[in-house]
Image (tube, rainbow, N blue to C red; front, side):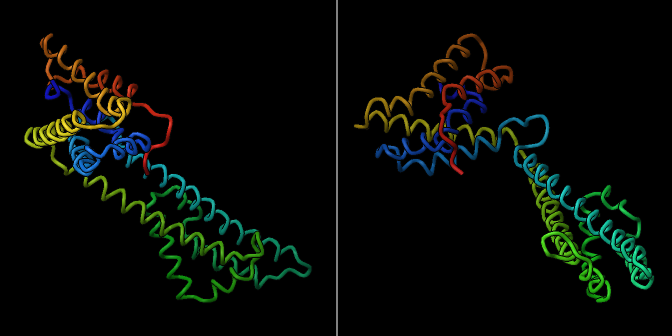
Length: 276
């Protein structure tokens, strides 16, 4: 009855053999099936690729979005540190007795070059922020006097505002890199076609590999507990699929996907961490 399993069930059954550290070690410790693990991994990737799309972004996209949010926050804080650092230095200059009007004027000259629209840049898109920091990097090369002024303004940790500005530029480059990775992933996820033919091929590959694993386990001299740990969840899932089939439900029907997959994940849960 394995052929009547849903794609979600196939993913859930094979995931521990590939992603769970303890289960993978156990699989590889059984000589009769250890050599099949590379085929298992490929079959797992195949069914994973045709798994029905979930609502919302993929796990990989969610991770990139979180990384982007953290990096964007750093960008905004550094931009404010540079902007307000120049303003604070200007006020210190004017607060001297007598006031250092020339240095205050230099701050007035630099500020609009670095921040043409003030701090509106922190409300811009990550791509715009990255473009702006690239502009600032070029500005520092074209006008060395700006860097000289920033280098003369102290910053925490025995550094200067020039160092803060360089950190800001670096974070802008990180933003650009993350945005590029997001665009590539979005394109890949959008253009990867899932047809009935690719689904059928993935199911067939999974069935052949799992059948080979079960057949080889019949010949294995490994401890019965080890064999049952690998084979048990598959046989239980097959039994459930048989009951569904007898009741008129097939793997093509979407309704059993979620509960069946959840049941398999509960059976396959382990306390150890997955393989990285």
